[in-house]
Image (cartoon, rainbow, N blue to C red):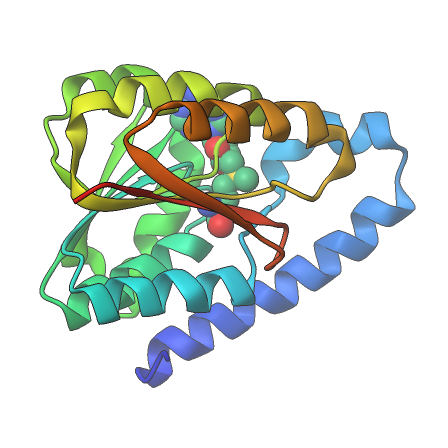
Length: 208
Ligand SMILES: C[S@@+](CC[C@H](N)C(=O)[O-])C[C@H]1O[C@@H](n2cnc3c(N)ncnc32)[C@H](O)[C@@H]1O
């Protein structure tokens, strides 16, 4: 559970913004929502946030990779948990403006030193990283989950956990989500389960 009041307040602010954005997205035509996608937080939400926070703290998972930072909502959960276990987060995001906003939020709550943001295409960034990572949150555009998984290959620690968001929602992601679940379950070196938490998450654990 988040105990730091500054982190809790930052999460509250972003959850209020998310609620406003959901109302706005429901009001505008779907094409407009797609065109304005980079305005929106599109966060993992509090249930998934709490779960990854618990996984990191209870497992002592110190080396964390986030693929898709957006404005830093999930980064706040990851960085707060990383601080508790003396770990660190590497966070990948295409959009430089979102990284700037996320950096500012993390700095305001005293977590800037726990996160290394890397701007650019996550697939290229993962290729350049060495790992090994103890926990990976995959939450970028949905057609990139499998290429992302493929590039993580030898960069996962024994017992590493991958959390992949948006397995059940939005419905237009169903085909990509099903393909990702098939791919991760076909690897042979991971156990994997779908949990109906938040937007639906696939949790996969590499054999230790
Ligand atoms: C669903 S949002 C992430 C939400 C964030 N995890 C949270 O909970 O607050 C997906 C993000 O992935 C980013 N993204 C999409 N394709 C990417 C790519 N190829 N490389 C890096 N980031 C990418 C988008 O810019 C967007 O900010």
